[in-house]
Image (cartoon, rainbow, N blue to C red; front, side):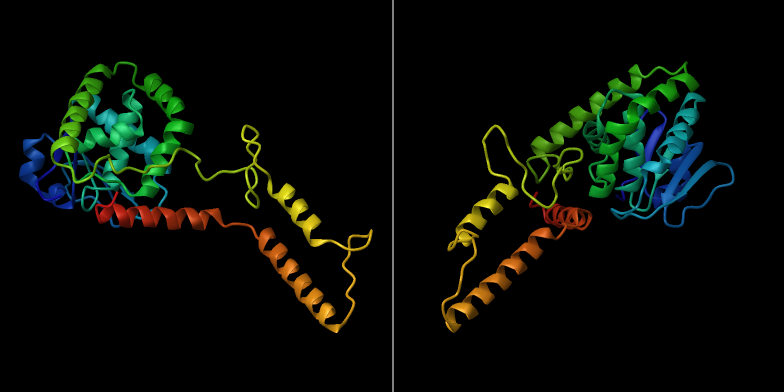
Length: 286
């Protein structure tokens, strides 16, 4: 994080706040445009063209809304022989997310490969899980339209060079994983797109292939076991002890049914899982 800005593609660099203030680095790398994305993003150099995005580094921050503006800013600068520095505070999460979205738009790479290609030249690159899920969403819902709009607006751009550069960066990342990484995988968000969606959030999914029982079927089976006695299916108590036992049993059944009908807060559950993954990853468990 403190070793200076890193070249990701020709004319595109990722760095931190210190790099953005370092005039020597800016001059050495021909930086003409600066995309600043952090909580207090503002213009620092009058002789540079700026795009300032105010955004926090937390999983609830929506960055995907800024992707189109940022991508166009970067692409336009590069096509005009400029150099772009994308920076946040540490050069780890927000700036890497924006740069990955740009790489996805100008190359055939998916979100994982885009992030890992940045890691090939900047090992500390690690968007938080909320940003990684937004990159996943961008890939699945917005990417093709974004690619087409960029081609229409900038038909002269040649993306083969960028793709070849990304392949070199990916090779460098693979060497890092084999030789220098403390983990056996890339450590990115492990679940697929829309992994938390389900058709019946209050019950169990029914798997026709295995013939597993649904919650309704299980409830019916429980009801048969619980209602024994006369033809109406109601237990008739014969003494005070039986009456007390029956009332207690009925209260337990009502309590269980109430618990079954509670709706799971999947948004909260998702955040808890994300935080757990982030903690484990930070401790090098994942």
